Amino acid sequence: MAALREPTPGPEAAPRPLVAADDAAPRRSLFWRRFRRDRLAMAGLGMLTLLYLMAIFAPVISGHVDPNKLNLLDALQGPSAAHIMGTDEYGRDIWARIVYGARISLSVGLISVSIALTIGIAIGSLAGYFGGFVDALLMRFTDAVLAFPILFILITVVAVVGPSLFNIFAVIGLTAWPGIARLVRGQFLSLRERDFVESARAAGARPWRVIFRHILPNAVAPVIVAATLGVAGAMLFEAALDFLGVGLQPPTATWGTILNAGQGYVLAGDWWFTFFPGLFLVLAILSINAIGDGLQEAFNPRALRR
Image (cartoon, rainbow, N blue to C red; front, side, top):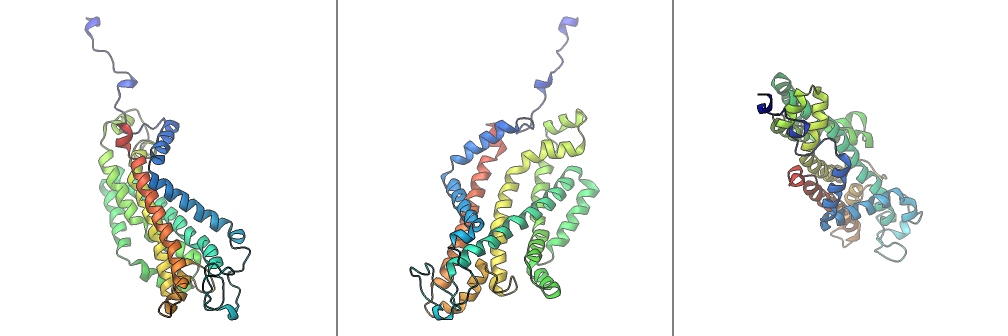
């Protein structure tokens, strides 16, 4: 009778997740190979890398030109050998201001979205995994945050404590996480009942290990895409605030403040004043969106399983 007994399933028979939790190195290699096949994403990555290098080495790239140096005799000069992107109404070199402004415009998106990702992943993971009262409480809090308009909050903060880069980071980051939280929660609700999660629970894995080791890696694709779109959105929002005059104040150089200063000179024929900062903003946004599309395909766990 012992010979007729069904064999006990071994570890290899246990249901496996869409993306295994213990093969990080092969996964990274596969992700990178899939990402490299997307030429548009690689072009976006190259362009964004150049923009960040431009921001890091701003003094060298700008030729050690002071972006805030006034020279009224050269005011509103078109592109020339001396000023390759022209000058503004105070004779300041627009190329130097764009290069230095990249430091702020690019960092706003990165830091703000990092704050939003941290909060959104934490709240969405807890709500989606535990469900019940925890889910209801956290989602009602998320709905309450969504009810407040970001622009109104930022204008209020600026009116109370004054405009600063830290305030912009904080307000965008602390108000941009609800969308990420809802996305993560939805992914957790669909994954928490899968066989590989039940196997991990049956093996005695603690909830935090199940969340961060088994479920979250399989929910990363839409989160990555949302993060890249969030970076682009944060940069546009910061530029819009500067354009409206409620963001960082002159003479601080950002792409938004340059656009704000040049809006009154477009009809006068001084096209370079707004064209070049707008061009760099568009290039950054398009690059980030292209990277997001490439990451969506590269991090798709179902495609990786196939």
